[in-house]
Image 1: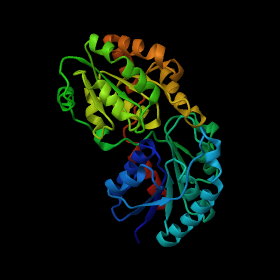
Image 2 (image 1 turned 90 degrees about the horizontal axis):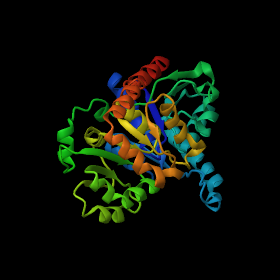
Image 3 (image 1 turned 180 degrees about the vertical axis):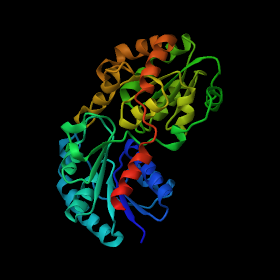
Length: 363
């Protein structure tokens, strides 16, 4: 009899792409498994998961809004409603196991599964665990983590250090630098910086780049700039007269962008960190300061402490980001040092490891 697995979570690419990678690895090992994803209505997963070929159901749920406490008034009602929705989905689908990848939609799904004694697996992608995962970890069957030292968050006997699953298109990319630069309409012989603030963009990074476009042009440095959706039109207009800049709202073929870059400026979400390790890139991290439990700073510092990356705090972006980036892009010696150290932290088969461990328990 074929197994049925629910994969819950989402909100950002950092949760969605690992979830799809795990599903793909499980499917490759047992193509009789039936999958159902559960996410939050109106979020990115409702578009990305069907594109990857999987069915998804959306919950009426929202996360805690740190910027506006008033907007949290309806949260308890949405959480209660989501449990009813989860109950209906489970009665219809009858899963043998549930995998949670983070994001607020994973909490009611895993909590309900645990109440029914269905095996639950957690994947914690950050080096500082989220509160939901910490609560769910107590009753989880196994907990897959990105880095070592996570015993402070989870029961030691349940932890398996797997790393973060990376999209196959990135993990096994064969694009060369010249092809990649041509794809973005840039010149083959100039140093290139990739600026990526995540799928939603990064206001502080974007504004300082916008204000310093002439500086990069004067130094004959090219930019591949992923702006994200917010204020994208203004950034496109600002860069319109600069031939050394390729502006993109969202980059689907990230393997091309990474291949073209000598240096990367990035937020330090879990997946960005993982991909940069796998591809051995010289990177300047600018952690998003309002991430839950400040996990992006923890992610970045894990690499910085191993001399594998540089960091500029969000509050210091205006004063330090341009000079730090220019200095790095001009120093091949520093780039090589960072690349060598970041390569040592790469784990390329996390999806296969996780899939094997789950199937062992479900056998």
